[in-house]
Image (cartoon, rainbow, N blue to C red; front, side):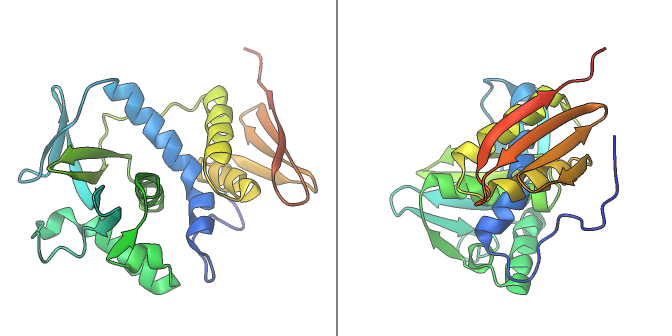
Length: 231
């Protein structure tokens, strides 16, 4: 069931990176699971000149987001590419994220180089594909660099099962440093489901099914309950 909301999920003045990841990250994990379902264990073959990534016989257009150097523990955004010379058509998504960083003063998006580990790079890629409504991302290791590319392809199909929604949220709020209550609201609304907040719990209405998440006063998860519509 799709729904309209008085307050849609969007980046707002005062949001920091943790808030943006909280709002958009669970949907990104959802998208990554869709990509994984499609490609399985097949490794991606990146062709930057053609602007595609191949998984066996499947070819998908890409946007270059950035790259990570394990030697220096640094992420470099693709929009700052004077020394590399990426084709401008392949870095439009990265440029969009810089513009968002400039508008909302989020240094993770508008700083050319960020010191961190590989997990932080995945978090940057996750926020990007959700904020820009892309279909997934993939990291390819080449010459000591992990190149992160965003993918947009009709070959990637959505799995909208209630079980997947429940499991994706549970994994996301456990494994990422986010605000769980905000993450649940963001994931629910971005999927187009009805969100019902209460004092110590919130409900996602997925058709006639329900996901109920309990929260502490500080917004941490106490329990996740799934009520599935019987066929």
